[in-house]
Amino acid sequence: MNAMKKYWLFFILITCAGTLAAQTPVTRQAWLQQVIKDRRAAILKRAGAALHETPVTVTAYACSRSAGGRHDFYSEGDYWWPDPAHPDGPYIQRDGQTNPGNFVAHRHAMVRFSRIMGALAAGYVVTKDKTYLRQALAHAHAWFVDTATLMHPNLQYAQAIKGRATGRGIGIIDTIHLLEVVQALRIMEKAGALPPEELKAIKAWFAAYLGWMTTHRYGQDEMKAANNHGTCWVMQVAAFAGFVHNRQWTNFCIHRYEEVLLPKQMAANGSFPLELKRTKPYGYSLFNLDAMTMVCQLLSSPGNDLWNYTVADGRNIHKGMEYMYPYVKDKNSWPFAKDVMYWDNWPVAQPFLVFGAVAYNNMDYYRLWLQLDHDPQVEEVLRNLPVRNPVIWLYDVN
Image (cartoon, rainbow, N blue to C red; front, side, top):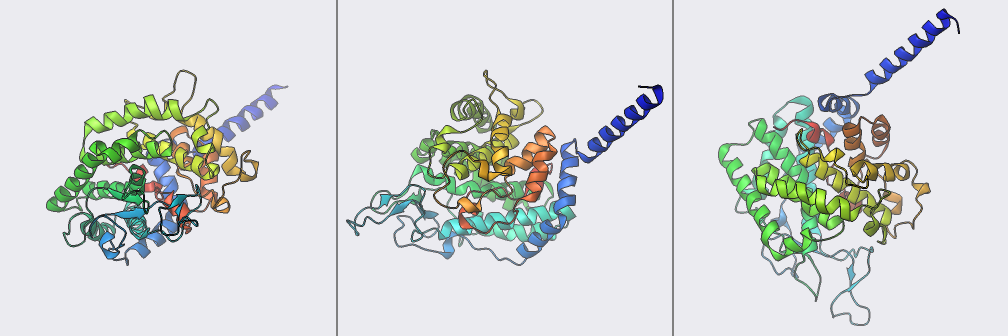
């Protein structure tokens, strides 16, 4: 190859490399701006709609089967049904099959609350217009401060089963939808949009709930769960402890991820065997990967990088993403049984894709995330997708 050809080959390679680098954000701030650029219209449309929503809390709905009071969150286990042989007796389980007759109105109210708070906070991140945060304050006040409408800070009556239990530890998973509520509150606090007395009362609520989650038998049972329930307990405790500045439980969650969640749930190939055993292996694998990704998002810092924390045999969160990515890109390549319900509704814009893109500077993850559904309406999907507004997580709240 003569000198001129070598020069032009070198020039082309350098130019292409420079173009690729320019297209790939590097810093967290650059990724935030990229997401805003690509999703701005959708974010503002969602935030604009949220401006017109009025607060609705658990006090708006009641169920005669609840052992709690008007301010107590109540829900019933999804997979429990009347026994055909004993219609008036205790319910029986049909794993993976949701009973549409069970009471879930409080869960719906909390999902709605989460969607509104996340959308309003995202609207502020994009525009810096505090109108969004003032509307968010009305919702937060209703749920955590107003004695007429607030929810008690416990989940003692969640996922009850008729004839068997007035509440269960696994019910704690219902408050994963407070995740974006807390992140919105942190944005509001930084923006000075939470009056001191409101902030004090709201933090007291989350401190009380954190105390209940970490001391009550239900909370301790959920912490010990070996599957996605244990992951979601850590995810929630990490979020709530961060908001109220409880370093003890923040440190506990870091160690729990390093010593229990990652090494005991993930197989050598990056899969989650306990999720694969379920009747909805695809949906549960996505759900657990998203939750574990959020643990890394919540707890990683310059001095403690969970994104690259690796156990001795090479397992880390990136391996989990690498395992699921091909099956999100092409669901038809999934080598296991189809989910018994909602198979056609997954995947959507899974959080692991966008946060994995940021953590590992991976444009393939990001492009796939952009292509997927960002506004699912199916109840089952909404229930298992508590993180819907990545811009509020890429925004610096410190």
